[in-house]
Length: 355
Image 1 (tube, helix red, strand yellow):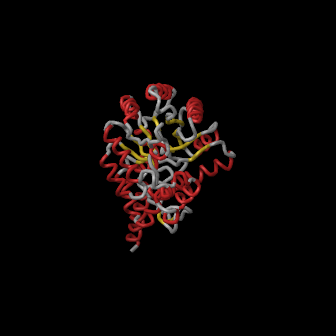
Image 2: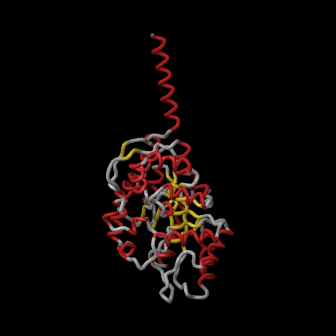
Image 3: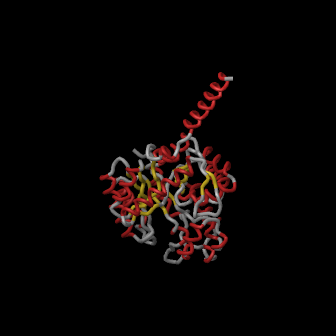
């Protein structure tokens, strides 16, 4: 009897040890090197990067043509300066302006600008949702991402092996009434930004038309590396996203600002979401979409830390969780260590060719 008890103890201990070795815990958070591959720094960035060092994060900040060309130039300079100050845990993506689109020199000027951005240290180039949802030419025609005028830019990036980072379209909730949206972060955002709430603007392209324009662009540029921000705007269904990743092998996606949609699907079918992460573990990059615009430092750092910590809990543990983003409880995915390492760091290094 005594021998049997000892044997059972060792079997239980061995099982516990094996389980512990397969998965990270909350206690591992600060020990594991990580990358937030979708961040925005519009200030001196010291608050963000100090917190990143405490939490063992590197940061990739992404410039966006959302507030005019002066903003683009300013953020490019901020990024180049920060890259010099924090060479070990900072990288950045550039973008380009659409001002002067109708000018015959727009392509030439844009390529010259991008060349200077890459020389300054940029590792990727971003296109934003104003393409397809806002920007128009001199004849008031809406410009889509598959417009032939963009082709020299995409060829330039492909030849230089520079990824194109794309926030194209919006979450599918954008085309629904506020009270039918699946996540509270979407209903809150579109309540504040009715100009991007496409349910209110049926004159604009549909969700399906936005996705089709992006895919036509990818079809024309099969060698181009494309990283789809926000789960490539296919956040609403991991099966549909999986089919898209299968069709376009040179693509990856980041998680930025779409955790709510993952929570929503996890609540209803945890194993499907977990299996998606495991099957596409080489194609998923962690990111948050945090914006550092010079907020009060201490409070902002606490917000950053809590965001990173909450996402870690969801991805590495099987805790029962709740979130203000959705109704109901859901369990964390408890991904294996090797998957977590890829999502949190190795995939960013691979897809962005980081040092």
